[in-house]
Length: 294
Image (cartoon, rainbow, N blue to C red; front, side):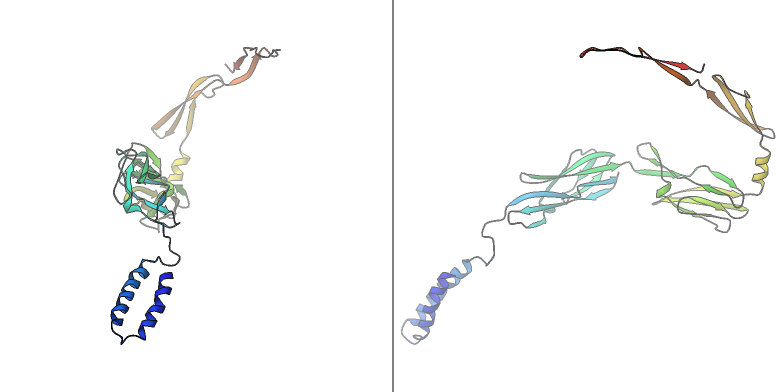
C-alpha cells in the first residue's frame, strides 16, 4: 500500500506528458510494476501466518448401536487462527477391536459383534477418540402364554420378551407396539394391558420394528364358573417345623401340584465375648452364634 501511494503521483504526472516522446513507455513500465506489488499485499484483517491444526475432536463422544448397525462419526479440527471446520475426510479412522467393529474412510463405524470399542480419528500427531457400544441384535420376540382366558370386564397385562443374538432373553414390553384384530371383543393399550369386552376370541399382536409375535385372547363366561369349582388341598396341613409341603389343585379329575420347602429361621444371635479391652495394635476374635427355629 505504501508503494502504491508513492507511484500513484508519478502516474498522474506522466498523464500530462502523454504526447512527449517515450512517455507512453514509461507509463506502461510503472503500471506494470504497480500491479504485482499491489496483488502481493495481504488483504486487510487477514492472518499472514499459515493455519496450523492445533486440536482435534470427534462427535459423538459416545454412541450405541446393535450388531450389523452403523454409526457415523465427525472429526472437527481447530486451527491456530481460531477457525473450526469439518476434517472428517482428512482423518484416518480406526477401531480398537476390529472383531467387534470396523471403520470406513468417511468415519462410519459398523457393528460386528456385541462389546465396547474405541473409535479413533487421527491427523498427523493429533488424535481424538469416541466410545462405541455394540449391543446384541434382537432376533425374535414372544408373547406368553399362547392363550389367555378372561371374562367380560376383566383385564390382563401382556408382556413381550426378546431373544437376542448373544442368547439372552430380555423384557421388551415398553418398546413394543400392541394391537388387537377385533376391538369389539377386546382392546389393548400402549402398555400391553388388554380389556375383555364381550364373548369371543381375538389375536393380540406385539411388534418391535419388523419383528412380530401373536397370542390368543379368549373371552368366555364359563371362566368364573370353573374358578368356583377349583378346590385346593395342601399336604401337610401345616408346616411349623422345617419340612416340605405339596400344594395340590384339583378340577374334576384333573390334578396339578407344586412343592414348597419350609426352612428354619434365625431366632436369636449371641456374640462372644460380650465385652473386651484392647490396647493399640491388639486384636480380638469375636464369635457370632445363631439359634435356629429347629
